[in-house]
Image 1 (cartoon, rainbow, N blue to C red):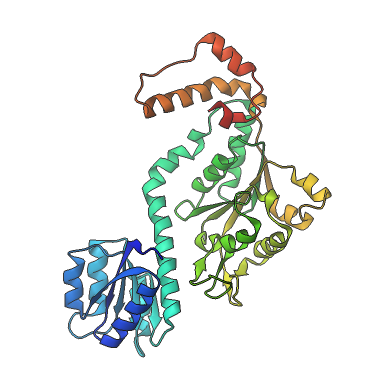
Image 2 (image 1 turned 180 degrees about the vertical axis):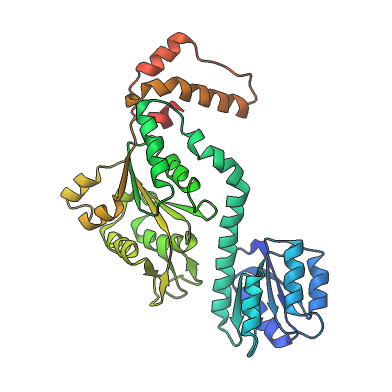
Length: 368
């Protein structure tokens, strides 16, 4: 198996046995691991290398785990720090999480649990980091400013986005392929109170049906053949944020039942697990199909349709908003001239007449 070279872990503990078993478990999961025998050594190593994850004992002679925590976060605020604590130190461990530690484990603990929490922390941090890096761009790219057009149909879309952004209700975005349904979903997310939390997307039509359940809910180690490690699903990754289910009409019927339960109960179990996980996720769904017709044909559950269609947004095709084509053409021309380092070009009158008269079966995506 390929080593996870993008992630390097520092294990800090004055007990040789504890360091060895933790290191062995992490290396079995293909992480690169360094060890520090005490807090002083750990601080010296931290000043030399920005570790992605630090797993440290709380109580050590001399420099304690609390000091390692403070120093690590002051040097590298993005570091994932997991505290190992023994009897009588739970209160201190909880306090450490308030001061910036990602999580804590009480000794003795299952090594599989440690590996799972490390993987979950890395994935959560990756999403947070991406959101932070892109937030400035996203605020403009996916806010109203990136939804081009001032036609009456688009003005209605803007009003709908503004009306639903601060709500928690499920939104069903329907429209032909290429009309910009994902841009609308992103505008809703980044205009609302969950904008600082993850927006996680799943294309239900691009993932084979036998893999989609695992993609959505994750699995526990040993759940099926080759399930060598725990896996975090998209629902868990989107906790406190938004999950965008694109091409929802392609979801298999058996998974529709499970999705309905998640929408009703706000909880689920991983594949192969009996442990219930509570979540706080807003659902945005999109489809280019007529879901009511799919319901009538027996291809989509009626109860799930009504759960999804709490707030419907119908996205108009480009042929119904032709007045927006000149603005879209100018936008794409500017975008690609900049990317190709070309002087800004413009489309002349006759070609523009042709563009505005064309039916655009592929909508904005085809125009681009």
